[in-house]
Length: 98
Image (cartoon, helix red, strand yellow):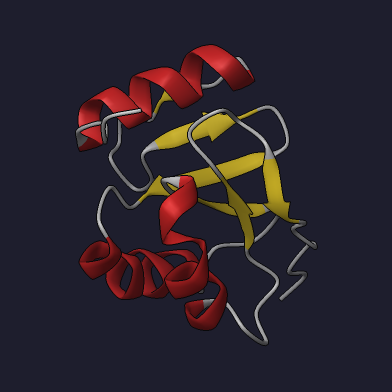
């Protein structure tokens, strides 16, 4: 499967997870139970994780499945979940309370 662009990845995840693009651009996708920021390349992952860290509630990083190793390393010791382009959960999220 060819790599999706950032916008294609956002559109696909919105469709698969019944999410909506965030009009405030604080995050990329608003979900019923949280928020997601998409990283279309491995180089975008560290910045996406830093944007997710201060948010409360369930937080997800949307990636291409091929980038799982980089995403896993970047989210170690965080409660950030990882979802791939199909919407599959690669790492479960936990709620950040404070």
